[in-house]
Every structure is written in structure tokens, then in C-alpha cells.
Image (tube, rainbow, N blue to C red; front, side, top):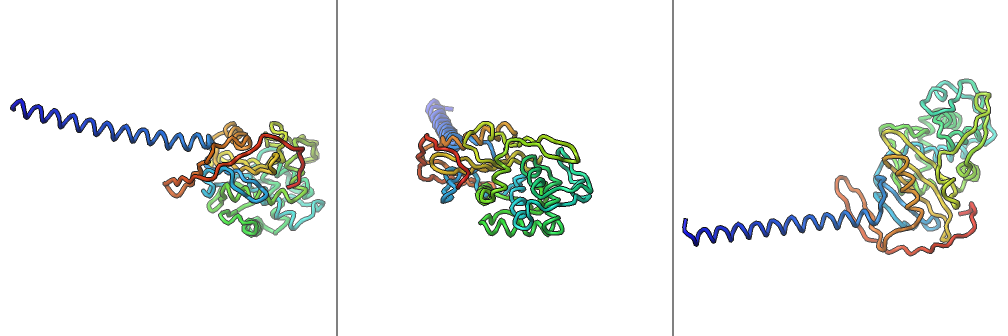
Length: 315
């Protein structure tokens, strides 16, 4: 091969290497920018999250707000509302076998035990006792399946149109799902029920269960960590992972946050505190999951003050 041909070949190879380097370098930079944009804007590890101003339901931050995910025990907020739409707090419910045998954490309910609707609500909302939710459903509608239909009607009536329930407890099953946006609307509606509002704001209390005095401690960590917190509802199953919806009163008004699909309980509370801190970047990026693709949209910057006002339960 002649010297000229060798030089031409070297030039061609060099140009190819330069073009390849530019392509991979630009691809790398774009990937970093896109990744950084989403991460810095959110820093939220949950699969879906939202923050709304409850007054006008203005979305202050969102990550996959309309992605359908399992709700776990956040379901019990709807269970409580539908139960109170039908039953009185002082009504007495006799625990049947299905309620007693529903998988749940302690304290377990005993077949034949008589419990007031109010105490069942306390057990369901403070400690997430699944049997208490089932007992409320059967007392209100005759069966859990019939009660689930009422739950779906309730969800639709408050605009939670991407939510569907198949049971009262939040245990996983085909067709049971909600979204972060819907969950925030459910929380807003739940706060209009004085008894629900009081229960989810209670840190701990003593209740008679199975003839024994039992101390119940709320599963909501923010009641101890956040002075302006009005309450909320946790949830966890292996399928749904860790979930939470809650409300806090800031100087701007009541903010509602919802988180679905967090990997651990620690990251759940870290995410919750980040959202309530209102440390959103200017021009917050909202990431919406559509099948396997992500659509990023820039929204108007959220400017928030740091002051606080005296806490109250009113919306």
C-alpha cells in the first residue's frame, strides 16, 4: 500500500473515531442532564408522588401523578368515609369469622366480639387492622364485595376517577389501584369528616380490645416529626411497597402529599419530609409515566414563604 493511501486511511479512521467520540460524549451529556433534571427537581424515590394546595387543588409538585399503583392501607380512608356515610359511631358490630381471620397485624379481633364503629375506625386508621376494615364493610353493606362498590362510587364522586377498590382493607388483588393525584383528593375529602380527622391526628391512645387494655400507637411518623401535621394514612404490602398520604398546615394553607411505591419505610419518610419542606426547584419538572415512556413538562415556578401560622384543623 502506498504512503498516500495509508495517510488517507489514517485520516478516515481518525475522523470516524472523532465522530464516534462526539456521538457518545453528547449522548452521555444529554443523559446526565436529563437524569439530573429529574433527580434535582424531585429527589423523590417513590414511584409516584404529588403535593397539592388543598384549597384549589393546585399541583405544586408531581411525579407520575396518574400512574396506577396499588394503594395498600391508604384504602382505609375510603373505607372509613363510606362506613360513616352509612353507620353511626356508636353502632355496635359483632365480629364474624371472616373479619377475625383476615390477615392483619396485632391486635387481632376475635370472632363474636362486639366492637363499636368508632373503635373499629380507630383500629383501622391508627394501626391499620385489616379485620376492622372488613368488619366495617360487612356491617355497612352486608358483604365486602357490596361495600367495594360503594367505595368505588365514593371515589368517583370526589373526582378520583383512576381509582378502583376490590376490598376494604387494601390487601393486594387484581383490579385494585389508585394514583397519587386521586389519593390526594381522597385525603382532602377525608379531612371533612371530623371523626376521621380526629383519629388520624391522634398519636397514641388506650383501647379495650378482646377484653384487654391495649395501647395503640399511630403508624404515622410525621405526627411526632412535624408540628403542623394534621394526620394521614400509611400503607404497606409487598406488592404495593410503602405508601403514605397526609396533610400539613403551612402559612400558605393546607398542603396534601401522597406517595406510592416507596422502597423502604425510611425513604418514605424522607420523601414525605422533602415534599413538605417545599424545596422545589424553579420550574419544577413533572414526570408522567406513559407505558414505558416518560414525558417531561415544565410548570410555572412555585414560590413559597418560610413562615408558619398557628395550627388548626380547618381546611
